[in-house]
Image 1 (cartoon, rainbow, N blue to C red):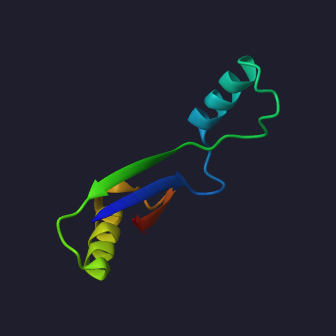
Image 2: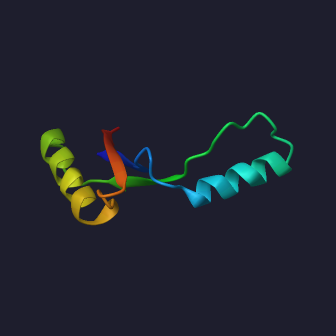
Length: 79
């Protein structure tokens, strides 16, 4: 089974890397950029077929390792 975990900064948390990317895009001529927020994507392969267990394990992994839940949100998708 495959899963995708997407981690993004919570709204209201400053994103200096996103601002740097926004500036770089504008300097490349992409002038209509109104804002950029950066994040992380993890594509994970799991050996089991129990979707409920996989989702539970991945949420636990996000809480403990993949996301800093003080400043980041995460989303788990089973593909």
